[in-house]
Image (cartoon, rainbow, N blue to C red):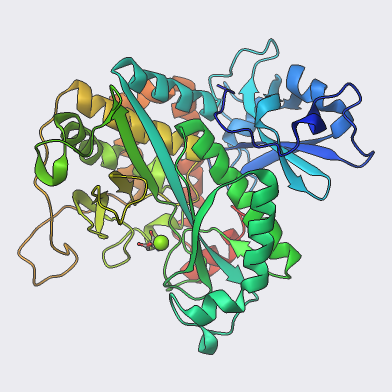
Length: 447
Ligand code: GLU
Ligand code: MG
């Protein structure tokens, strides 16, 4: 971990020298994402950067059972007693502009070894496991969000030219800060819902991609504030509207060649590519609580929402949980699989770990390609019957609890913490009126 191909600090000398050359108010924010998907942070003056790297900032083990509303769902192994550290790596530091620097943190024990509740480390394990069968992955994240206090409903057009031009200043601020931070944004567009936008990121290795996703949430949140707006990443920010997804596009290479194109299978799939799809389709129900597990997620993860609620795959099928994008000139990053059910309430490290673990298991088991669904499964006139992913709390929790794959990928403490945090969230919020919950949790995932 910590070795990234691109350097994200524009002027490396900024963090190189003995005195650092920092102003007295320059500061470094190190953050982790908890199991409710909320980013939590500590701030050091930039002059203490070395200490953040070497000793870290203190964090109670209870950080791993923090819930979406700041309740701590303590369990015997994760209480107020003990001390973990938030540690950052020098090469991960990004300049956000205006004197603020940011870095993704790992949760470690006092001696610097990774905590068993560190989700960034869990993703590293899943990535290594895939490498052990010769496969490396790249991930490109998408982030949907609503801007509040923006265009009035009567002026709004989905995918509208007016919608993007009305937010020119926000977009300018976002792109300027992305450029300072060295973040590659591929595309920005207005989405289907009211004041809903999407930012797509260029693909990167799984850890860097998840770091980039958190960074993007930070930059979107900051740009919105700077322009007098508020960004919401809630899976459903406005009751009854479209939801916000956070889809992942995955591509894989084995022995220098892509596994999703250039083969003799359907749409150019190789046997590895077929097994990867099969592994995903097999495992998805076990991981819904990880990918789209908030008390709001079920409001978007349904038929007709383009959220991939159906447990199937299909070429360019926007209702399928796994949408295949084939290798055409229309796909500048090559063939990839878009896993759609994920939303921004997911811890991005854990969701990528789950997905890579599912792909790995499919490859190891040499699973055959399931039938492709090439029609809209949400259309009652189509003669196709496809199962929906579970969204009932009891079913999501039971699927996760009994998943040997999840146990293996996350370990028993992280599993227990995850089940506790999700269980609390469902019991507290799933039965409340939708308007109330959307209002209460609207900004939980804003940075
Ligand atoms: N808003 C949809 C979701 O919740 C996705 C729409 C799209 O296909 O981009 O996942
Ligand atoms: Mg979208």
